[in-house]
Image (cartoon, rainbow, N blue to C red; front, side, top):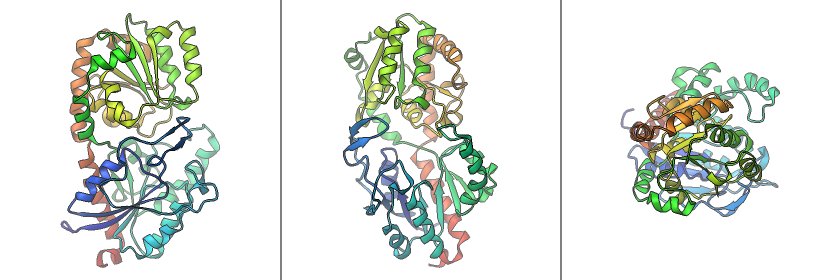
Length: 404
């Protein structure tokens, strides 16, 4: 069915700044007729983000340029942090009477609403695709009993999908290890709006941004850009920065979270408070300036299924150092060309890399160009084309859908 146009319902927990630009492109694609169903509008509406610890609303358009509907949430305690935080019974009717060729459930199984969409799709014999970004069985909180449960449940859970779509090579390997057949797997790259990031990067006045930070124009600047939470391991960056002791270098933290006060205190203990800068939460439209005014991104997370901060940084020409727990490292980081991967938690290894790279500014410039080149083939185009192929394969698994 090479020329078939697919009508697809995309079920999402809430608007995400990374996904909305891709949805806009999908809405313009000749082979797709999409409808996005949101179970919550967190992020598009001002509210408290429990991870950042601040009230926020993303300052880029999240709901423009594609068809969407808000499905009323009937949860007595609405929120994205609990299973019954999303209870959207209206999904049943959407799936049942919408005449869709396929349902793509981006809402994870950890929400009750996922099961509503799944049950409706199975009852009405509508192909369903699961979005899954996991790259391993180990949970973020380190509770081993969860791993044992996943080993038993996940093969059956993902076996319910007609196709599983995953955003990384590591995710594909995980699904294979669970016994999901090759013809029911699709790599749909985890992407951002490449064009927007490149356009915004061209407008940045690097010297002006650095003046606002109080950082010399010729200084070597390391960037940590993420929520200041334990599993992001921001303290590793601070310690490695202090141990590397590169003269005139500066460290910038872009992000907010519960570790902020502790990091500030540690910077004083390590004697680097004068070269350490905390920017707080940075909204989307201001992030390109943060990347472009830096020289090297460090992303040391111990739990990071992908990490689109790597995409953003590389599109802005920033080489990256990522831990071996960051999913993006395997797909985007080419060792020695646009960055390096280091063992998670190995502060000495990270300090060695910082010392090596920050003292070779010409090499950093070469790596900057290589970072931009890598992103030329990891873009919304690859994501959408892969999704179309996956929807086509899912439809073939349910013959009634092809004839509908």
